[in-house]
Length: 395
Image (cartoon, rainbow, N blue to C red; front, side):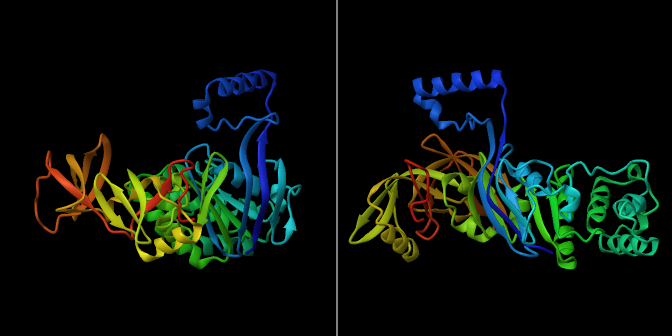
């Protein structure tokens, strides 16, 4: 039960002489070939930068999810909060106390790892009780806390078993139970569901949501799975190359992505992109692509006007579930049709780009393969990104 504040946290891994030579070579290559500048190598004179100027205020009992692709710095950030990685610069506060130099065991945190990390020779009961035993907690208190946690996680019947006799989902519940018996101020979870199959992941997501309601602690959860981020977090932090790309509620990030990366990373299937022109006619903004023109809705008009955005070539983003088939629209040819029960996912070729449209089946069987169709959408679902810096022009 604690507020966690990260102020300008940075993590740099020092590099040796060989890597320094490689860095100088790469720097020279970037100067000679500007195309290389598109790649963020994150190598500086200090070393390899894993996390850059990370600032975040996490409220007491809030559930925060750090999400992003592999190598974006999310697990490194979590390990700095846990004390398993040194902080290169910046300040970390837990419950108002600066903990940069505080040992992990003294931070009053608990961590659940991806690999369960259970003692194979101990029973479930002993695994859960171990941290309390080394604190010399009384037997009565240990028994109460272990059985209480086991009841919350529905593993009471497995307390006498060894980990090898449990399924992956049951082992992960034991790992979570071992963490919560300590009543930590902050519970850290590092991709705890990634080793489970799809069905078990769904079940465990629901269990974590229930658990959150029953224990009073602050959660920091790391995942590369945007579905987990969307379903679990009060707020999500989208990361890329060590930088925070956007912070917001799942709905805010989904509805109002701040840049091209966030728009493509959050949402399944991924957002579609079209080359388009942002124009102004009679004081109103519109987007036009392949001869199809759409006037933007009032909210978007106001935001673009407030920023003084001018006419320009843009990247137009539209989510697959916001596309309809109509008499007018952007022309495309259906190459693949995936039946998903209540809907079909149509993969179309639009100007040599792959575009996905989700079309309701409404109980009908329709063959779209090789058909030419028109893709239409309204002005409230258009996302307008700059071609120069890939930022959303509304923000």
